[in-house]
Image 1 (cartoon, helix red, strand yellow):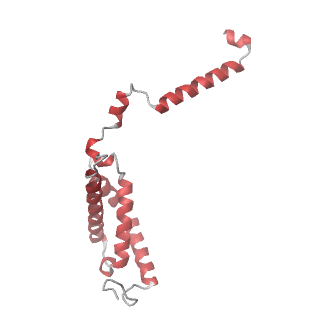
Image 2 (cartoon, rainbow, N blue to C red; image 1 turned 45 degrees about the horizontal axis):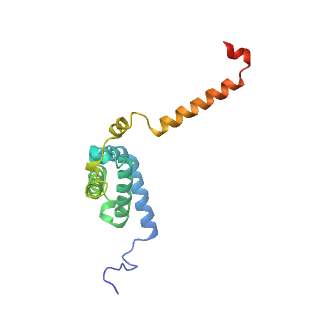
Image 3 (cartoon, rainbow, N blue to C red; image 1 turned 180 degrees about the horizontal axis):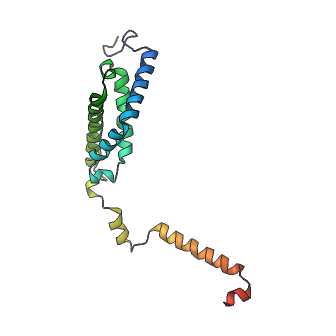
Amino acid sequence: MDASAVTAEERPSPDAVRAARERFEALCQKYGERARRFARLKLSAALRRRIDSNDLLQEALLDASRLFAAKEELQSLEGEQFVRWLAEVIHRKARNLARHHLAAKRRSVRREQPLDVAHAAAGGRTASDIAITAEDLEQLESALGRLTPREREV
C-alpha cells in the first residue's frame, strides 16, 4: 500500500467534516469583509487589470476551506488567529497568481496597456460606440417614418 494513502481511521468522519465546514462558514461570515479588503490590498495595479480581487478571495477561500476541514488544529482557531491564518492563505494565493501571470511569456501583465490608451489610439470610438450610433440612427429613421407628412414639416 502507498505510504501517502489515507487509511479509514485517519479520515475524519462525515459529521466532523460537516462540523468543520459549518465552523469555517461561520468564521467567514464574521471576518469575510476583512478578508475581502485584504485580498484587494494584495493585488498590484498591474495584476488587478487581469485578476479581480473577488476571484483571488474565492480561490483562497476554497483552499482555506479544504485545509480547515483536513487539519483539526486549524478548527480551534478563534478571532484574530483565524484572521491571520486566512490572511496568510490569501497572501500565498496572491503570490502564486502573481508568479503565474508575471511569468507568462505571451501576454505578460507587464506588457499590457490600460484600456484608455488603446481606446485613444483607436480614435476614441469603440465597437460598441459605433454599434450604438448605428442603432440610434435606425431608431431615428424609424420614428421619422411613422410621422405624417404634416408632422415632418415642423
